[in-house]
Image 1: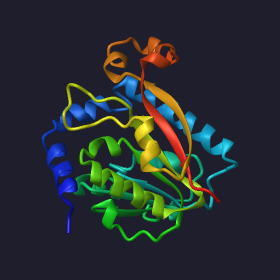
Image 2 (image 1 turned 45 degrees about the horizontal axis):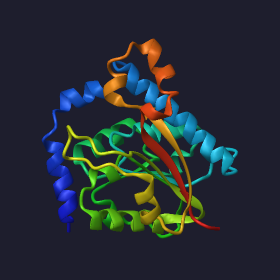
Image 3 (image 1 turned 60 degrees about the vertical axis):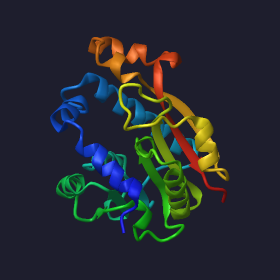
Image 4 (image 1 turned 90 degrees about the vertical axis):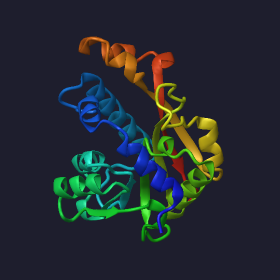
Length: 231
């Protein structure tokens, strides 16, 4: 059975202009998207190396809300084992795109993450990138966080990348401040850093200035947070 909130998420995505979204998030066509992705990858590597992971080989890693598979592909480029990667995606067309992009060894599951057949404590990291902000129902957010936490093995964690403030121009999303993350993962040790130049500003700047502007914390709109489960 599909939860009412996941049905609402599907309806909200269906209202979007797919062509506009494709251009806005294209790493080739959009210098701001490319800069944000590269900054996010550097921060991810820094967090995990500080956690004591010298490499990603042999580590079970899962992304919920994997979209068309871009982040899973990045994990493979960083050395993750394809056979130990799992992606879960609610939207059928995006799950199909991920399946077409990634090696067959990568597991792709289409459907509601809270109903996915993932064994408890089976993952060393669970990624949720701009997923919580798409969940407007507070109760489902809590259920979703508990599900991800259950999948994580002790010593691993949930890696959350999301924006921290509401977008007044988009009623279909809600920001995820660090204080709320603390309530969603009350037993976690949080390691968090601000990232990503405000996208509306980044899209208006010349490509050569985006990186420099992103160095200013007041202009950043997102956080990357590594929520570690005690060993």
